[in-house]
Image (tube, rainbow, N blue to C red):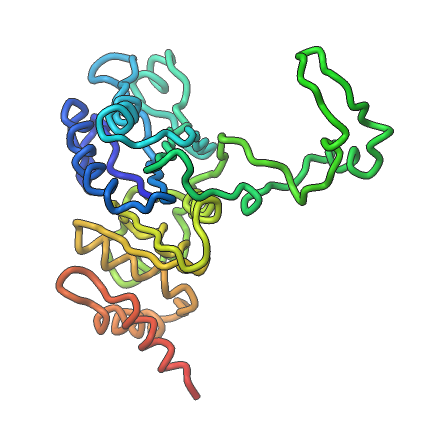
Length: 300
């Protein structure tokens, strides 16, 4: 599960490739990932859209990535998903705010790719709550439901009224990305760490980790950033690896794993700073060492 830097026109602090070079750049990572995947494994890539330079027309780079990975590298497209972020701000300003000729772009494409035609997946792990109407139907099927062929020619059987514990989710995932006051953000600010500017909500990797993996499976994020994926994987009992080229971002991701540490006063902040220092390494931080140190401090 990963979200690489998007092919945006405006350069970001974390680095992002030019649109014309992007597909070839990302494909190099795809080539390395494919043989590392198990036959039952998946590669889930979150890609935001972008405009072409100077005109109000969209780039197709995220779709070209999909075609490259499937046609050239040999991945299968298990299913396409779309992440709707209702808190997304209007952009680009020129086309949306100033000239008012485009609407807010609030949807990312999420490609669920696999090595084989039958990757591990279990939709029963990610069922969603039934609608109020469905709950009424399940209480009294005869009152609300008549098994028959619909005008659309879909044949609906009596089994439709069976309670399966929840509804099958759609491939449109609606999650606001509003982490501006999260524990990670506040902890980084408190001790002066560089916060990663692009973070997806925990609900996004959580859905795919629950859907596509089992306890103790290995989850890898090759563009881990603030390591949301690793934090979620650990909370769900999965093993994880995170790869991040920027040591500052990798180091600051430790804050995601110390959520129980208080930030109420100067003493708490000083203690967190010392904890960060003892876990620091040349290439980032040792999360296991930091958590072990914290656990020892709590022993009576």
